[in-house]
Every structure is written in C-alpha cells, then in structure tokens.
Amino acid sequence: MSRSNVIFSTFVSILLFISVAACSRAPKGVIPEKKMRQILIDMYLADAIISADPTTFNNDENKSALYQSVFEKHHITEAIYDSSLIWYGKNLDIYMQVNNMALADVKKKIEEMGPVGPDNNKTVNEDSVDIWSTDRYYEFYPAALSNTIIFNIKGTDDYSSGSIFVLGLNVFGLAQGLKSPVDVQLSAQQIDTLVMVHKKIFKDGYYELILRTSPVQRVKQVYGYVRLNEDSVPYNKIYLDDFKMIKYRYGTEAAGRLDSLGTVTE
Image 1 (cartoon, helix red, strand yellow):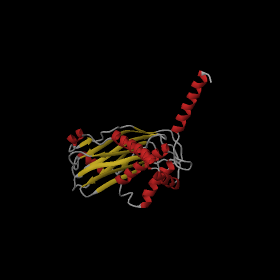
Image 2 (cartoon, rainbow, N blue to C red; image 1 turned 45 degrees about the vertical axis):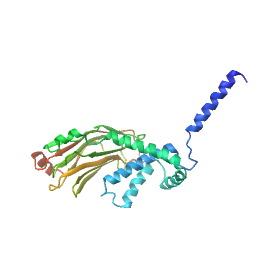
Image 3 (cartoon, rainbow, N blue to C red; image 1 turned 180 degrees about the vertical axis):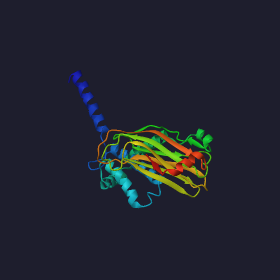
Image 4 (cartoon, rainbow, N blue to C red; image 1 turned 30 degrees about the vertical axis):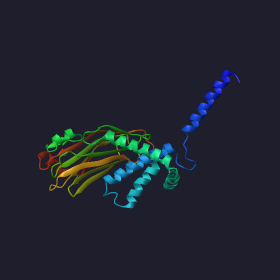
C-alpha cells in the first residue's frame, strides 16, 4: 500500500471514530442525550416555577399541565420520557453526565439573570424607586436554551409594610393564534402572607402588573417569572424589553394614584 493510501485510510478511520463518538449512546426509542439535556433543563425550570407560585400549582392537575407543556415543546409524550428515564436509570453514568450538564446550564442561566444587588438596599425605603437590577432586554426564540425568566428581588433590609410593586415590560413579536404566549407572575412574600398577581399576554404592547401588599407586614422579597407557553403555532422571535420594577412606599401621593387602577394595565 502506498504512503498516500495509508494516510488516507488513517484519515478516514479518524473521521469514523469521531462520527461514532459524537452519536448518542442511547438506543433507538430512547431520547438521545443531547435532547434529554434540553428536556431536563426545562423540567428543572418548571420545578422552579412551581416553587415560585405555590398557589397556582397547589394541585397535581396544574403541575401536570406545566410538565405537559415541556413535553409538547420537545415533541415527545410523557410515556416516551418515562421509558427513557428507565433506560437512563440503568445507565447511571450516562444519566449523571447529561443531568450534570443540564444543572450547569440552569445554574448559568439563573446566575446571568441574578438577584438584586446590594446597591439597591440603599433605596429600600424611598417613596418610589426602580429596584429591577438585572437585564432589561430579553429574546424568546425556538432554539433558546429556555424561554423562561425567573427573578428574585430581595434586599438586606425588608421593604416597608404596604409597599406597592409595579412590574412593567414591553412585548413585541407575538404571532396571532398563540394560545397563551407569555405568562407573567409577580409575587411578594411578607411575614406570614403571600400575595400575587398573574397575567397572560396575547398581543404586543406595554404591560404593567400592580402588586399591593398588606399594610401591616413588611415585605421580605419580591419574585416571579416571565415564560413563553410554546404551542404548535410557529414564531420567529419574541422581544421583551424596558423591564422595570417600581416600588412605591405605602401612603405616598404616588402610591395613592395607583389606587384607581386595577392589578394589570396595558
């Protein structure tokens, strides 16, 4: 065999090895590792949404509906997911690799969004102040790691009793026919009281959610999520910008002007 043929054969062998190594180790009928990683990311984020909204997800039916939306997003059934987990359970080394990568992706995403920084603590008791400190612009698109924004705003000191929180955002790019494209939840935890407002956004525009807290208890934290409920209607990108979270001190003139409004404006 000539030198050129030897080199060519070696090159082909290397390519074949790389090709085989890149393939999923999961057998036919089992969700491949790359896709399972994306599914696990969305399942972990679904768990986070359930934890952030215990009132809405206080029964198995609502929890199941949320998990079902993950299956629909990835075009699988719950039965395929469950049967795939059985195979991964018998191949724990593979499962742990996939699961650890999914957890790392979720952690990275949450860290990128981040909680409110310590500088906001200086303005906890001002009459009105924007306490949103993470990104003000996001994009939802089909190939995204996850179309969910989770936020948790908590200062070193509690917010004053009766504070009013107004979450504002612009939404652009919603396709007609989407069943429930953008889901927004805003909650506040007081000493022994949880208050929340919820909004489903169907069309482009600017929206505000107004959350009023009890005037007899200080506010420990404000948290919630913005997520895209993906369905069968195709879309390109959905843009969300101009995020703000204005805290109004109870009893001030600015807070009084909000009393004539509902919990959601657009």
